[in-house]
Image (cartoon, rainbow, N blue to C red; front, side, top):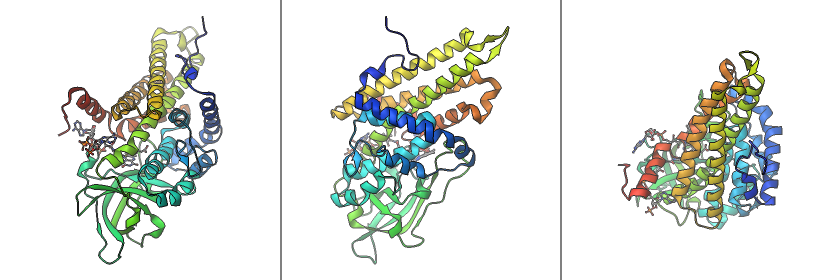
Length: 397
Ligand code: TGC
Ligand code: FAD
């Protein structure tokens, strides 16, 4: 019989092409060699080093599924493998990348005019321009359809809209050059997407104060977007998409990425807990890995990670064939975030008191994974999306 590999228990590597495996290797090497050494200081000091996005851009890891515009044009599975490599180090680093790649570049690629694509995609792909995605508002998180941010014809600048409102909990906003902001057009009441170029905004029209002192995702920078009659050229509005379909289409790709990423974080927790359990000795000099209760924790987590990768790979293949329903993405986003968080919390117990020290990394993953379960649709919201698809009855309102 074939040998069992605890790092790839169900042989998922057999499902990936040579090219996908090579991309995964490049991403893993970069993340372990260049990102991992920075993460503890970044997390302690709540700092995001934006040169990371430039480095990722040089390796072709940003907006990797996009064809043209200086992007790599790889498969969805390959992009998932990149995301998994990044989140193996830290969910905050994956967040910075997801927003740039899936939410901003993905949105511009899917809905932007050719002019907007030419103007922004190559710079975003190289990490020279930083993007953020503003959907959530202080009073409307799970229910973005009720947003209050409004766009109306600018009273004095011909050919411009004037946007006013506030977005909150926005990854990368304090350092973003470009903001994809969703606002209701006053004349129709319909949600539209606007690409705001910070360098073109007059002073005071846009403020992006950071939200500090987070207790998770500290290696990622988060803030608000406050818009006060901000002038935006009409041609910076996505021409043909209106309603929630716009932001949710971007979210389909980002949620797909999170399903892969959280498996990377969980795999890191498993590898670290296994190593610790083999080294740490208690009671008659036995490694704690000898004890059945410890082994069960490792078995449960390893099983969930293996299942999670297989499910994500299956949805990735369907996505590229145009056969992935959004509910499939809700299913893997919910399941993988929940299982990663639950298992990481249990694996944390293996480290005893040392779990409290950040040098063991496990506590950081646990705090981060809570956030992954919350953003891009909290898990209970995805339960309701699935429940609606199963029963035909919506339970939101
Ligand atoms: P609902 O009636 O369900 O849909 C309204 C319109 O949108 C369409 N639609 C989708 N289109 C494409 N993909 C999807 N996944 C779609 N889901 C819905 C739908 O067909 C409909 O179109 P149309 O043409 O008929 O108008 O709308 P609802 O208001 O009832 O929505 C309910 C609910 C709960 C499903 C939705 O609001 C939801 O998903 N809430 C969660 C909010 C969320 O995910 N926010 C994410 C913010 S961004 C973020 O967190 C980034 S973190 C990034 C990082 O740091 O990694
Ligand atoms: P609420 O909507 O107030 O929900 C609170 C609780 O109530 C949740 O458990 C929810 O599941 C539950 N709930 C709500 N409605 C129902 C219902 N009908 N039935 C049952 N339960 C319900 N947003 C962006 O737009 N862009 C970003 O880049 C971004 N980055 C983020 C980064 C971080 C670090 C964080 C923490 C958040 C980020 N978000 C971003 C926001 C994120 O998407 C929201 O926090 C999330 O959608 C939940 O919204 P909320 O926080 O307002 O919670």
